[in-house]
Length: 88
Image (cartoon, rainbow, N blue to C red):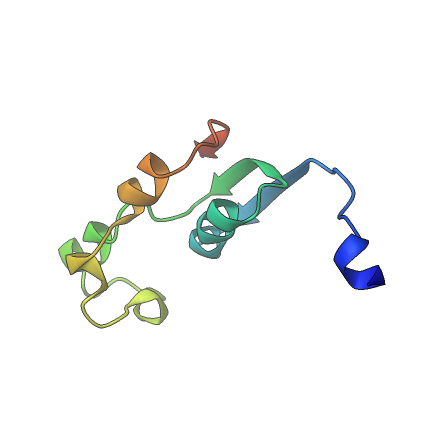
């Protein structure tokens, strides 16, 4: 079976994001061992920021019903084996 024998080449990936798309990058880095470094510019550091500033622009696309009762962005960081995550 050719497909079963194929192996992904070893590549170190560095992800740099601007804005809250960084949250998707954090989720991706949990599941992709190729991602070795994540640079997050102008990204939320906690979903609490949305609750504390409910009238802030452009945050409602990040709201998922009842998500905060399960985890927050600091939890994503604590679940990472990846040490190279930086917020700017």
